[in-house]
Image (tube, each protein chain N blue to C red):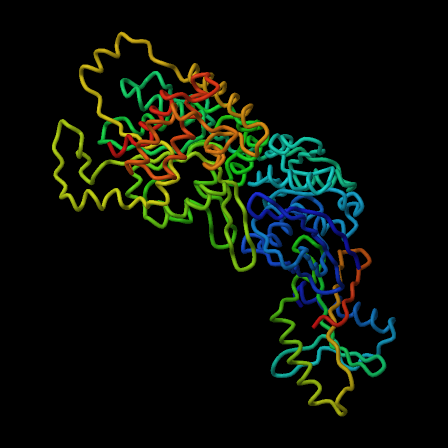
Length: 511
Length: 118
């Protein structure tokens, strides 16, 4: 009796696939059959669409509707297909123009009264549509500003199914409705804690700046109350603004998580601090049907902070090894593989022992030596090996507090400016290579002919290697840090001072 | 007779006339047995058709077709089998049809016919 088709997008990770939504009307008793691997929420679209269409003044046919979501073997999730399904059904019945519907990619969940609800994942969805060459998308009005963040694509925001049908040529007078707008998410990201709040701990402050400048991972070890969390929370404030590509990626991940964007891309690096009871799925992503990004992905291009790191389950910590190496997380399921970006900067904080007082000086540790040893051993060697800066943070003394009152402390703004300059210098130096940050450069290249340091500069480091104080891998990491220190100090080459400082930042933990 | 029964009677009458016009021969009307009732049993060529007629005076409570549930269809199928057993000759071909009659008061009724719904 009638057939029509339109388009929607099924998301899998951050990438999506175009889905053709076909509707066929056959001379049968009323019914609506949805095929093409829908999940539970999508299978219920039939109920929503029928009610929404009736309440919008353009009821569906009384005959049987068969709706196929193609490719049929691709699993599809969520209520975002409602609008596409409704318009395909109306076009099959010739209520709206099939030609017009076929040229547009539709997004949006329907309310029973026919209005469109804001839907998660609009930004990656519209990006997919644009990438696959589509020129027009139709989205709920609550997501219009988010969809407009994607360049070079025409965005039509509609408040209701009736408006959508009128756009596609239905002969109906418009009825104004109160649009459903996205919930306002407090985006208080502009208030980042300032570095000037930190008293004492000058070496830790330097370490943070070096970490920001070179993109190095950081491990902070110290007794409770030493200010580890306070220091770590100031790292995102030292990082430069996101470049356009990473900004789009961070915003897409946020949109995928169902958090609104409020019409602007996220430009500041994200900060994720999962609790130490987090599961592996919460950390790297997962989920039964729909595969969702985890904390590591949400922290992409920003900072992932693991407070009380030894309290995390070791499989959770070790799950981070793959993304630390590759910058990507791939989650495999029987019928799909989802890829999420996970190029985060890792900051871990830990107490030196279960009671926390070991090495603190003012109180004595009550832990048996065995418990102390076991505590830090929970962080596996391979993971610790990937962390360039390992620093001991000490409690502040009364003398330092008095002293700090009179001295000028560095603010986050000035520190960030230096970080940006240092990153610029590194990028300039590494221009002909595949890397842009010192933390990405492999060791053999640093020891290679192109950038090998003079023996006089590396004398202290060489001696540490000879004595067995550090391994070859540690040697490379110290070199890497030394280069960042040189970039930070505005030098063209690291000298003995930078190498010495780098050795301190690396070995501070074991001292 | 209650108004809804009158409407039903009117609808069945309309449906019978519609089917006769379409070349069907009416075998029985309102055939009853212990299990229930078949509105119309008609024949065209070799096919014996069992017809359920649903009548509504307006669409405000939904289309008549929407009132044909899976349960009702299953009963029709059972009744058709019972009818075949008691018939003189077992029909060579059988079919279940549904006819919707929308009969607003004082206006010409609209008839919709769905063939082979089971």
